[in-house]
Image 1 (spheres, rainbow, N blue to C red):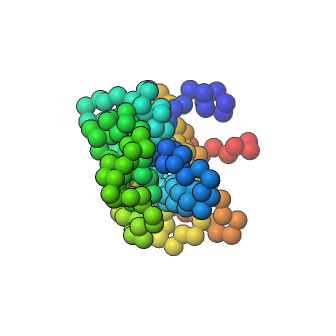
Image 2: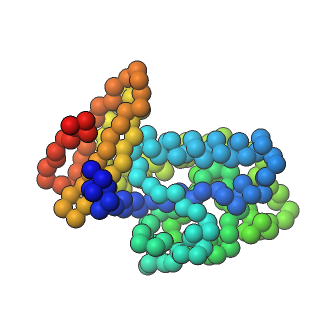
Length: 208
């Protein structure tokens, strides 16, 4: 298993931007940092439970290693067709913004109002509260991501009456893929169907 893990790679096409520089603006404001962190975590859990595959993007890494590949964002060996900005993000690094302005960006809350800490519209002020409709907007975005992922040849469709808490991790090999599934609920089972463009599957018991 260790050898397979070393040669397998994740190829996620969605990048979720971590609101790092926004958090820097609120050092010392525990309530604001908690709201920022809680909303970001809620977004990630919504993506996870919808079985959306994504990477988390860092503004500094994007600024130093990001580039354009057509209309897609490239960072190192990976390209992303869609970048998601989390709720309550207010600030962007200027180099990161210059790249994001040229690729497909989806905003779950409101657009950032600052670049390098400076207000784009000084009279507008900061974003004081989290838009109440952001989760509804995020769910609509997630539905589109599920469709895109299915078109790429992979999807997990959970049973309609499903109270389990299912997470997955997928890695690709030269001749196949490894799919790790885990239900973290201790009370409810999880069931569903794995859709794949591959021609067969093997079920591995990690105990044996």
